[in-house]
Length: 377
Image 1 (cartoon, one colour):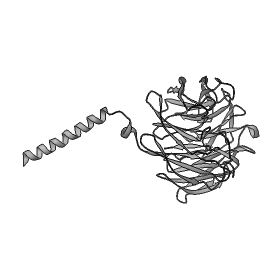
Image 2 (cartoon, helix red, strand yellow):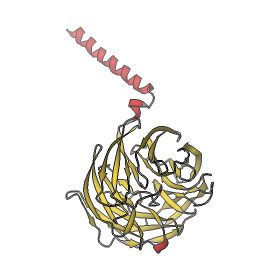
Image 3 (cartoon, rainbow, N blue to C red):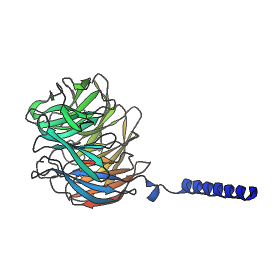
Image 4 (cartoon, rainbow, N blue to C red):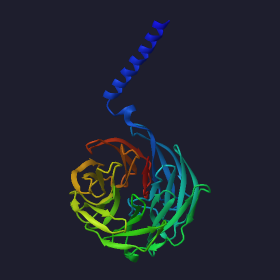
């Protein structure tokens, strides 16, 4: 009996060791590719805004899972109707999804449960034509682009599952009525809000005092037409859409300090492409991807520990002729990059490799003209 027990334990150890060895040599694809999740696209229709949900499997493939009304209206038509980044935003824990309703001047919040969304609340956005929303813990700020452009803050009550306006948080943009704002986002520590103004070539910062935004300060953008941005550690990596002919787009980087000061790190570094409007940074902060709407491509950059940029590949991926890539989102583990194609009503997915290269993995149709905003997990 003693010998039989020993042999049994030895066999189990041998099987376990063999499995460990197999796992070590298996390529990181297929079942080893990560957890499943979802990709969300906002329809932005004037007849009623909604969010389309696509189930994402572990290999990055997409399957339509349902459509969920926001309780508000969008604005309608075109490949890039809101001219913004961040119209649809997940909370840090992926349990809440926030959507702007630009046609009805409101903000909606959903609870996320698998491939299902449950509308919790829809409230006035604190201004006219909300185009971007950002979330940090229980704080939510919306960027309103029309009338007197402003930012306006809300507190999310996790018990009541409601949004409440934050007293004293509404601040007008320094650029005024003609600023043409594109995005609002919290700095990584949540102490500063950053806003890009396309028409004035300015970048604004708003310091927060106990969550309440103070009056904004403007800084001249080094590049032309600052649009989308994301953070790599304490540095804002900003796309410079340029709005000009082929080859004028670029990406710049800035250190955002605790007092709201903005220090240029890398001057506008061209990607030889056109209309680099959207930009994402994978979670490790060592790469950045610029989405070039005018040339139908994605450019990749490396990001140093100090925020310095270097062009890695001007055409890391092509989205195809007539595609007009006009939104981008990363899954929370940064294994996949998804791009909304404003020209053909699809979502395209790419696998991100350790060297920064991209491999096409998925395409899903059924996104209506006039959509804006994409989020992924």
